[in-house]
Amino acid sequence: MCGICGEFRFDDHPPDLGGIARMAGSLASRGPDGEGAWRQGPVAFGHRLLSIMDLAPPSRQPMVDAELGLAIVFNGAIYNFPELREELIGLGYRFFSKGDTEVLLKAYHAWGEDFVQRLNGMFAFAIHERDSGRMLLGRDRLGIKPLYYCPSVPGRPDSGLRFASSLPALLAGGPVDTSIDPEALNFYLSFHAVVPAPWTILKGVRKLPPATLLRIEPDGTRRERRYWNPGYDTPADAAERTPEEWEAQVLEALRAATARRLVAEVPVGVLLSGGLDSSLLVGLLSEAGQHGLNTFSVGFESVGDVQGDEFKYSDIIARHFETEHHKLFVDSAQLLPALTDTVQAMSEPMVSHDVVGFYLLSREVSRHVRVVQSGQGADEVFGGYHWYPPLLESTDPLADYARVFFDRDYADYCRLVSPAVRAEDKARALVAEHFAAPGAGRPIDKALRLDTQVMLVDDPVKRVDNMTMAWGLEARVPFLDHELVELAAQVPAELKICDGGKGILKRIGRRIIPAEVIDRPKGYFPVPALKHLRGDYLALVRDVLDAQAARERGLFQRPYLDTLFAAPDEHITSLGGSKLWQAALLEFWLQSHGI
Image (tube, rainbow, N blue to C red; front, top):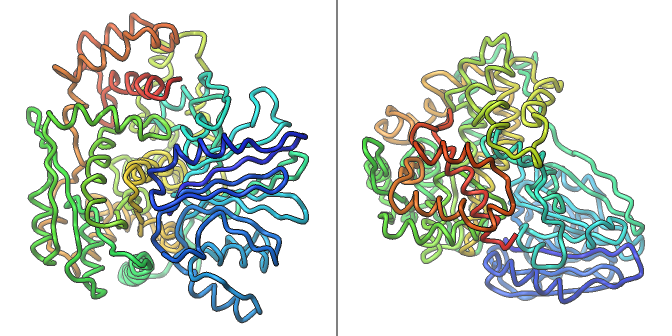
């Protein structure tokens, strides 16, 4: 697990090594154990190291194989690399290291671009071919690891390309067009703050979509290819399977996914919210022989009738499985000062209230372990959200989905956004495009596919990656094992949404974990102070939106903001977020990064 960056020039200018050093420096928290740089002709790579898989010097990056004529920078973890290594040795390849990075180099040489089909894990990489001069950028199937890129010189895309593991690293590397992208702004304010790839909030920065390879020729010619797109229709030969047979298959796949993510040369812990998903991970790890696990929970002060923690349930799991449990309680005195650092750690503006929770929890966890397993993805993959059941027999899935998921309709968006940065209703158009694509016939399956391939990537997964990596902590997500996701996509929707959601996981859970954490209302890792803005939190929001930078930028229409300020609690999104915090968070992020 690391931070990577690089530059590929298409003109006669050499790569900017100073820019590479600045980008790598910006990524220091993602890789606190070392740094490296490499340059050959028009290409330069930078790397920050977090030692997890192979702690020995031969695995350091950038890694160059002179015999094969390949160089790589890689961020992630390939869980099946030992098996791939043995297969490549059988093909005659020789290895000088014991980690997964060199396996990627050899696998690319052996199998070409299709080598990604053999990888089980999370990854973002850049590989340069010495002899052809071309470069390949790639990202894992579920977008667990990030990869951003931009032209080397704004306004001259033919001059070159820079890439990095975070957007702020690109800002550090050299000039970037930092004007606001109106289409991305429409996504942010409409689609629950999700800005899907390839967009980012800045015109000059793009991100590689999940499950995508980008091949770049020496003259700058590019070819993008999506290499994974699972089907969401139950195959004919599986239609007669009983619920018990589906349950057995899912349990087997989940056990395999959890076990794979124990591959490391350092201890592995678990982020334990006390909900079904993280509790099930603890149970499966215990079942696999992992005893004395370090588990971690976070809680906040309650506001009114909104409970701020779920320690009651995480304690049940910790006692039952005899874990080394750590509880972090965050009171208001800690929360407010941490907001600035949390926003600084965001690669992109993320409005979800629990981002600050993950940031503070990651700080605590990093004092004990360097790798944690996390339950992100179970709700999207196994149908845990409340908007899925109404879509089961929907006759207008687009309208039904937008009504429960979108933060505001287009008319409300137009009232908020200044005409100069207003765009068409891109969010609704994107959902319509995804829903119309083949491979998911039923309305509910359309929504499950969209949420897994788009929303999940640029909300929960990005949130966990950014906040854990801010403290040099690697987070692994077993529910996003691509083989498990492929299987879950084919499970009949009725088995997923029954029993109040995630029905098939609940039935599995009853075999493994105490029923008290299953038979209870769903929790959402709440941070009530950011939903019900009062006192110092409301003052912070006012300072951000009244700042000179915000007024000069002019993203929002002042009369609408005044309406939000007059009664913040009356302007809550359908998913329980504060519309005022959403606007303020964007400005807060822009100002924090000097944009």
